[in-house]
Image 1: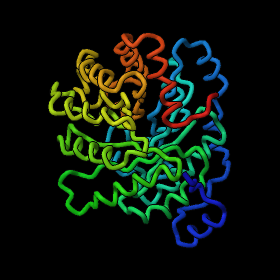
Image 2: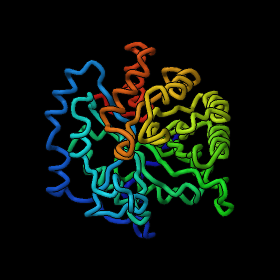
Image 3: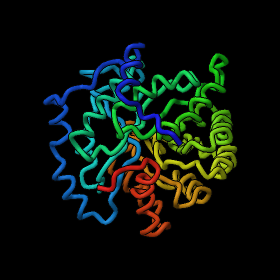
Image 4: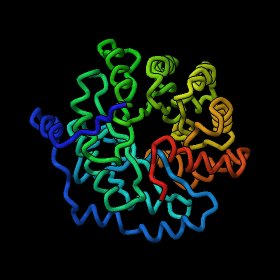
Length: 338
């Protein structure tokens, strides 16, 4: 299929249309220092670890630079979380790399968010890929945005634009699906972000419709689509989740689980039925580990979540766990082998 990674002319045409939020950020001292300060130490630590991890779901934000509206008022999240912080939180866990996932910065800053991550990746191979935002509900018209976005380089691996509220009658879902169908032309996958816990089975139905109508797009479900772990509820989530697994282009992330449980009193036993079900229906080749840091901090330390996920997946065996914690992320997001 013809690639739509744009040339200089395409970029200039998009810029003239006002679609670039800003030029690429320069290699500023703050960003360069943030990216490179602990690379050597992390690499040495990971080399000695029996289960190296590529975390496929990490967010970052620097509130001194860019606004993130959805964290306002949150006692845990309303502060800056930058790459150096994640490296400190993940020290000793075996993390050797990460995929950044768009963190719903203010919409006017979505291209600046891509610039921010591209600059980090340029200075530190620890940042191996990015899932960026794009307004896919524009349908065919999203091409202009994508033409501009992918000028940030090969660090852009996929797109995430959350499912709409089930009560939103103004959202054009057909155009949204068309936007998702376009992504393979740009070499991009799609992260499905929904919330069964809050929105009910309607979000699962939306995900199934996407899988049916976008068979050529590589799809990955974030956070198992957020089942209601707090109430130990499994149906109809489990049945519909199994239906999603029947589509060969659909994968899932084992991520974002402790924040859907009782955040103060959850146990590994609370999570086990959901992880077991995901492994049962998707198999070991289409599951990917994600830390969902820093939101995970609302219910657990990062290290505790990693250890919990490892302990709950020992039944996969060593080869299966290597797939879950690193190899599958490399395959799905087409990451460099470093």
